[in-house]
Amino acid sequence: HIKMPHVYMHLVQHPEALKAFNGVPVDKRKEMLPFIMLNKP
Image 1 (tube, one colour):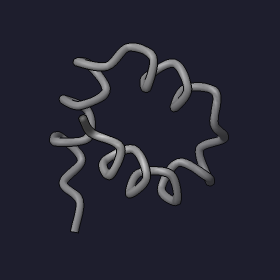
Image 2 (cartoon, rainbow, N blue to C red):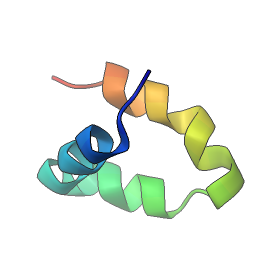
Image 3 (cartoon, helix red, strand yellow):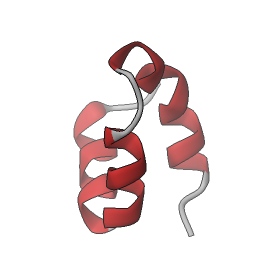
Image 4 (cartoon, rainbow, N blue to C red):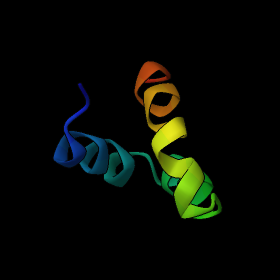
């Protein structure tokens, strides 16, 4: 299970990911979270 603070910390450290995330409708964001977290370098 993904903890939201962990996701936000990741997004803050990766502004391009945050920009992409902000462009996604709210109802799609939960679907995207696993992909964002998997794409960590």
